[in-house]
Length: 126
Image 1 (tube, rainbow, N blue to C red):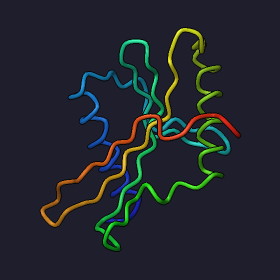
Image 2: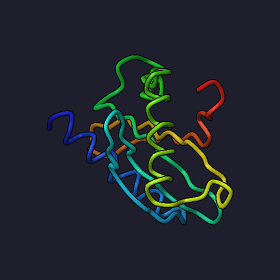
Image 3: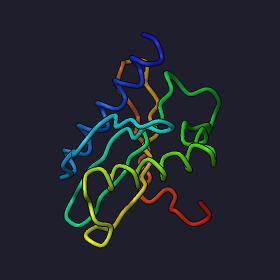
């Protein structure tokens, strides 16, 4: 399985996991020039932009795919989230906006271990 297929499988896993947690998936793989949002989900008054990071296996003891999100990536996610809200006519005052990150490691049996971080970052400093 190539990187794109693995990423797509991981995103599908996270979307299903979120639905199981009571979230409504509004959109997936929203693209604009300079950015992409993996999953946009809504639960009550929370609008979450979820970045999915996955590895085929653990590369080192204690390592996590969450470590692969760098400041430039965060900046692109935030910029794309604001564009998404503008294009969908979503008003910020109607929601608590959150940027979550799901880190997945694929196990030998093909299932995933998930490390889901709510409010992993915010717009401060960006």
